[in-house]
Image 1 (cartoon, rainbow, N blue to C red):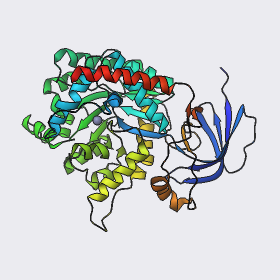
Image 2 (image 1 turned 135 degrees about the vertical axis):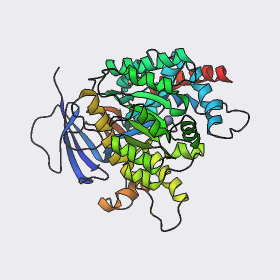
Image 3 (image 1 turned 90 degrees about the vertical axis):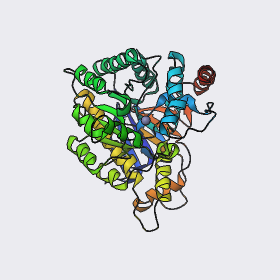
Image 4 (image 1 turned 30 degrees about the vertical axis):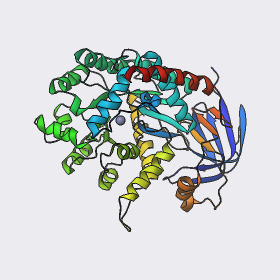
Length: 445
Ligand SMILES: [Zn+2]
């Protein structure tokens, strides 16, 4: 197959939190799926195609460091008659009913609807945490195939849990193990080992999970940790000082692992994460919605936290802005906040590049519009009302840029051009999602 070389011109490039934060009137040369050069002058050479972006603004394709695509059909679903009183009741009365009702068809509809929303928002890499206990075998392969149809990068993980009995525990574990074997070496799929959370896994189960990894290479857990205090209380009851100490005891922490939430961790837990070089992901809109507390500033800063949405949404710019506002509402005047631009653009890029490189044992660069990075771009038709300079990037992105991208490119190919999806039919996907939601909701109502 002939590898195409294309040129994008007349584009203003923004790489937030980097040494190349702004390149005005840029030319971007792309060879296959990789950026070859970013320059202010026209590069020499022949191109198969030249695209004039007419002065639009490009951000790197964004990364969602923790998502639940399976919750895409939860929008508008019937809620329990009585308001859940705490985090466990939210899980039992809402999410565990919904995930158990998912079959193959509704799961696929969730994947498609969630991926469309992601792509349309310029989110081009998704680190997903999947759960469909009534449809386990083959679900991660379906996720990988569906993501491939959209040209997106996907990290797979099936939430292993004891809560649905031994058979489903075994099948979920096997689904993760199969994905770890099947997708190792795939540049666009990064398989992880999904654990729901410490409090729904017994000691015996954790031991079984660890033993089953055998000689598999580059595995890493993707687990909710200390999202609510109840997770820590459960670990104490089981005889451990904390959830993270429990995971370490079962030899489940390493540099490929993702620790999600961590709202109630102690300083000694923070040191454990640093010792194992595990990655940490903050999900502000979900935490606010579930009323589980607020992650301390120091945890986000010391652990170079990434940013995820925990299934709440697929728009990362919106998540970052909401995170910033939620945190500000808890701070007194004059107190320092957290730079959400850094979480979204710098830390997520580092986390995703590390993970996806780990699957192939090579080097994949994601999250910047710079040479050698994968050509994933979110391009906005944005007319600024104040000059864009390195010092005004933050204001323009968080307070000026309110629309979806007009064009989205992944792996050097346009997937959206002038707001139109090129390879999939949004109408068909949405129509199917509406049918599937009705079926799904009827099962648990
Ligand atoms: Zn989650």
